[in-house]
Image (cartoon, rainbow, N blue to C red; front, top):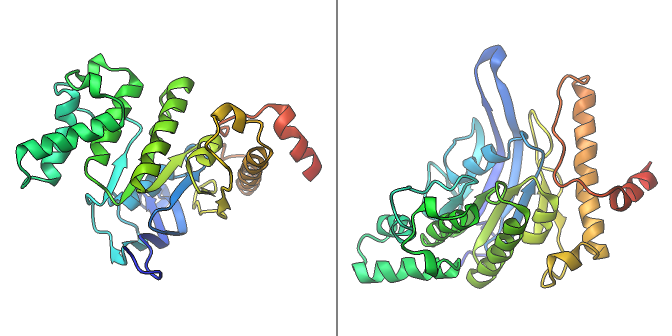
Length: 294
């Protein structure tokens, strides 16, 4: 366990951009984030604001131009098994079964374990994501949701101290997405793994995290204020949609992001267009709070 002064994962005044000279684009600027052990954080923002770049910095897949990324007070210099990442694309080997895809990670992380122990470990996480019936199937025989479950099981089987998720459910249909949201919440509650979710869905962020942090629109995107989630999420998703606290928090986060988008549009004199934010709320829910603010 960490002592009370040590954060599990930290970003301190991180800056990163791509390109040279006149073609350079400064993506993230002055990013500061502190993640405690056991926390569940969601970073939400518009498409193209730099969310994937941010999570790649945490995973050690990219290095910052300035500032520091720290894990347990030590600089992150590359990928590590303590920081497992799940991407939106499944990254499964198509010629291997579900079991063999998960075993790839287990064999890499625990090469000294006896084969029987490694096999049991992989099967445990396959069962955790409810794919015991599909252990002998190959990716082409699986639905999109099942493939993402395999990807999740493979990452969890590495026993990471931080689970990084880069819009892992973005390509799924609404029903499958909702089901996997609940599965990830159950797994996270059972394992107590520190999680950091990247998403452009405000509802998903509130549902799956203890803190929601907006990523302001870029270029030079920075993190906004932290919104604490204090909602009983044991209820089903449908009932949450009529929960006054859920609606209030959702509107606060979306209003903040829309205000920031407006500021960026003003600074760029209409030349820099941002896509719409997901989800789009009904006018009857969202319009009332905007009209009051106006």
